[in-house]
Amino acid sequence: MIEAGVPCIPGFHGSNQEPGFLRSEASKIGFPVLIKAVKGGGGKGMRIAMTADVFDDQLKSAKSEAMNSFGDNIMLVEKYISIPRHIEVQIFADKHGGCVALGERDCSIQRRHQKVLEESPAPNLDESVRQDLWEKARTAALAVGYEGAGTVEFIFDNESGEFFFMEMNTRLQVEHPVTEMVTGEDLVHWQIIVAEGGRLPLSQEEIEVRIAERGCAIEARIYAENPEMGFTPDSGRLTHMQTPSPTDTVRVDAGFIMGDEVSSHYDPMIAKLIVRGPDRRTAIQKLHCALEQYEIAGLVTNIEFLKAVCSHPSFVAAELETGFISKYSDDLFAERPIAPEVYAQAALGLFFLEAAGLQKNGGAPFDIPQVGFAAMAQRKSWGILPKKISIPNETPETKVTIDVLDTGLFDVTVSGTPATYRSVASSWDPQTRMVKSFFPHTRLETRVIDDDEGNLTLFQQGEQFRLQCATPKWVEKALGIKDTAHSVLAPMPCKILRVEAMAGDRVKKDQVLVVIESMKMETVIRSPQDGVISRVVHQQGELCKAGTALVEFEELL
Image (cartoon, rainbow, N blue to C red):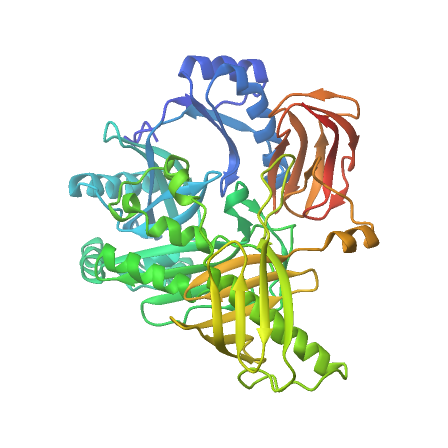
């Protein structure tokens, strides 16, 4: 690439993989450095070493993940640009010497070096730089005699305004629908034309006219993962799934439908949402509206997190960098207050569901679809708390108690708040699982999805809420449910790759305890604080469920 005139990041790309040699090369390059699998992709087999002290550990982790994902652990080491943007160019080349750039995509919003949001055209980019990117991408493809679809990826330095060649992916990528939206072309069809020996359907000039006419497109990747827990993957059955309605400017590419099982053995991406607008601000608004139409229950997704990103002022202002998520983590992960009406609707939903169960099992006859109940007055109470997996000494969630009194209409009291709602008319639709309630100050429609373990997922006014029925202490004792307050829990269904601690060990906060794998991704489980280990529950090679204990502590210091 350097010989062809394509700027490259300083780094080592040789065959010597001895850790000491690679560490020496990293020192010559200057820290921080990026350690990356030569055959990598999708952010796997990539680690950042900020200093020489952590280089060996990061190299070991990257090699292990690369071998598991690609069957190859050859690494390259490159200078890590501190405030970069990730900009890539979609190119196509044919057998007749034709090569075009179909615009660029900004893919800077990432976690774990894997893209979350992609958009085209890249915002806040000088037109001369844009044209230079296209030219360098075509040059890179022609330099190797490339034919077909390809993506030439660049790192753009926000501080210097320079860009550097990073890699070329010899295929269409996950985000190719963004380019299809802004060009109006079917790129898979283009692949077939080129494979059959045909010429490219459009010239570079025609492509530029198309892009100028069609505005801006953004893609959001819908992942089965928990952003609040470090984007750990999740798996399970899609017990409920509703997607946005497709239009000419709203596209949903889904790999799963309701009822499918999302396995822990594969990548956590379950769908892509792509929107287009006449300008970037309109596209962002359209994306947010489409995300509000999404409803997924049965596992955790990143949908609420995506809403937070696309409504963040710095994203709207196109102040983009690959460190965006960590830079604005306080805003993006700010705790969302749960309004009393949400708890009230959850309790009313449970009331109706319990009544339906009684009717099914021959209990008191309740007329479920009607407003209220015609039976005698009765009072029910539920303890509900936000759904989270805890670790030792994490501040426990406060249980909210909701009392529901039925006298034909409903009186609902939410503990810990001044909220007491009198004479609420409420009804339940068993087909849609929708609770419709007329509170004194507002009308609400809430979909309530429950499971056999007391987990509740509510969808209300474009928001999702994950709640859990609190298990009474006497039930825990009767069922022999073990207290996990002094345990480190598995954040997801996983396989144990390595165990780095033993019973009796005195460990420090952030010390590595266990390394797990889920959805082709390694996760390091560290000690939440100083303590003494009493038991390592799972050993290397074993499989375990989310929320089960990995390590138990004898005492916490």
